[in-house]
Image 1 (cartoon, helix red, strand yellow):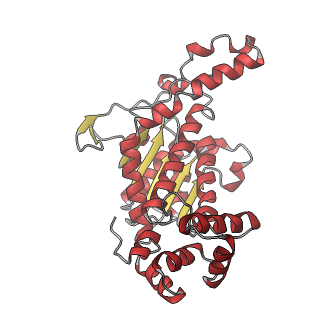
Image 2 (cartoon, one colour; image 1 turned 135 degrees about the horizontal axis):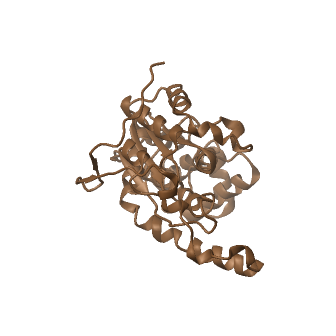
Image 3 (cartoon, helix red, strand yellow; image 1 turned 60 degrees about the vertical axis):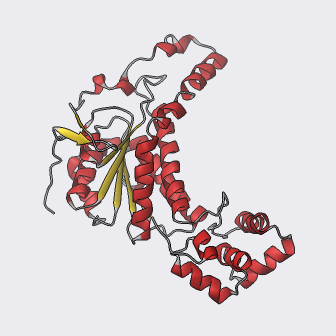
Length: 328
């Protein structure tokens, strides 16, 4: 495999509004805001349990406000992921340490909620799957491993590759994103520091400036919380844009256990304002598919017509009901 050394951030970086802004990358760990001491937690080790909880809670309350400032960039990534999945591409997360575990969690939770293929939303973790439970953070320092692992997924222009790194300087993640971008993939990142190598390597940079952690450098706290919130927004937003949500109901739920079967029945009852017996009967006749059952009831069509409409609309439930063409 040919080695691609990530280039340093360009002299100018294209922001979401189309303007260019100069980036002087921050690469020294001590200069990062996430590594700075937090005045609010001075003397933390002398505090009582309730004081510790109160300080952490006070700092956690700042996370949503930091994420709010990044909503324009988050929206760009939502639409990019929706287009990618619609066109047969993938969302591939890349992370290390806590960031990688957040990526893995989001990737693994999408199929039961949206019935998407596990191949559509993937994760790459520095150190491999064993790093989810055991610390192997040494791998995050390797540019070569980052390039190797993303190269194995063969990223193309159909894919979105999204790197997560609280610091924005993790070599494994930066090199993987740079490699994917060189191969034509759409790239994005989630970080909690400004002006970092990862921001320069990605097409779209989502920056959640959560400030210093309660325990300096412990980015499993506010930084990881912000990353979890943002990954939730991206995949939920993309799946909603694709029509796998109807109103605010999770209609593409995969009914693999009793809880999810009950959820599917409840969704159909609410959406169509029908009784339980009718919902159960319709789901059975729809082959245990909530989207097919919903289209049958809402559009007053039989199962073959509902299936045809869903295929025609690429699974977009509302458009299948309205029998209209999908537009993203």
